[in-house]
Length: 176
Image (cartoon, rainbow, N blue to C red; front, side):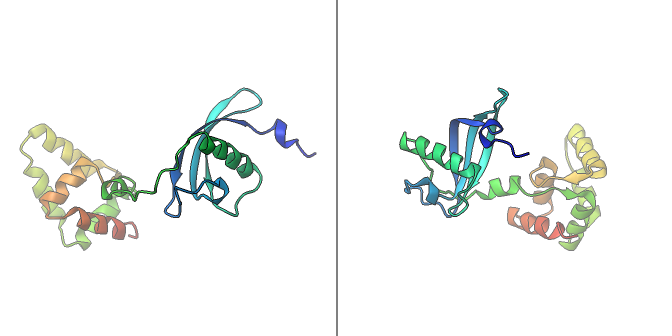
């Protein structure tokens, strides 16, 4: 049995904003020609509300996307601003890097010419006893490592890595 589209779909109540894509012309006024992602609030027929996100790309304008484009067009006509795309900073990219398993991280360090004993020496050299013990626990027991974790950042400096060197180590270690 086919369900009625209008009784089982939400109503868009508010357009929160738009995140531009590298392909976005932020001066374009026709939302059917814009590339990016829109955040918006909806209310479902049962009264439940939530925030949804939809990617927009010219040519993908069908079904629910048409309703989203219409809502964003109304928002834009009312003064909503499509931001110019700004590339992420290196720090923003580092924050989004996937975690490495402890195995990947250690093998990556070895491939980069650093030994595990150098890491142990660097941890042993931490002056504050509490911070040293925390670092030792992280090094020995962490199941995974995040690129911007304080231990990773401090060890990278101590072991002579530049931030770009760590980025390279991180990317190559993902394959291990």
